Image (cartoon, rainbow, N blue to C red):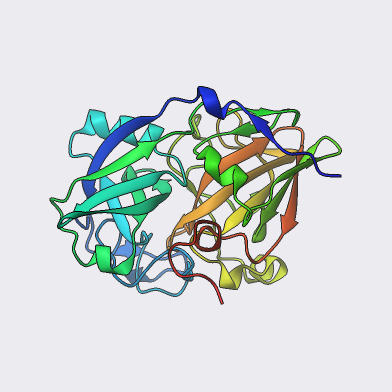
Length: 294
């Protein structure tokens, strides 16, 4: 029988951080595509009215597009702290008129150092680039007991207790529902970074054979995915037998080495994570936010 997870959640620090929606960024007029073409498309940043978790990660006229609200603190030092402390599933609050409305952190994006937050549609349309959003951070330092060498990071402990994402300890392994399995060979930009406690790394989707084999054509923003033979314990590397679990946090890209990004949630060097494929393993379903998959 599965055993309930024990954690150190009662000893985790709860620290608020403040961010603002990040204005859309555009650093180059055109970029080179993986097949020798060029393209000019909207990219990171912004308040995106029609892209939320649960939506497809592929097919948009965009480059690394971030769902819902891309945020950062205008001060670089404070933004670094916010990106480290913010964990997937953290509650974000914003004042709209006389009301306080809630959303959820859905991931972090390295390079631009953005924190993505999902708010209800009516809240999105009231936000400006001067709106202050408070994130109630908790999760860094989370430890799981009795699961071998499994490490957690960037993960609000509340997610471990949600019925819509039923993790369980069984026979010394952590059974984790995931929407997709990914082979480590297709992971690109961000590989080799020595700290996985913020940011992400990209899924390359340029090999049709692999895409078909692993069913990656319908990858969604917010999908929980397991990367096979990838160890994130002390940075991102290839390691036979290791398993890492993360969430898809931004959209696709046409440039070689890039694609939908994954923020790490769990990792095991010795393979003590057993991924269980489930279409319901998406943040939209788990959090009751975004666009729930049909």
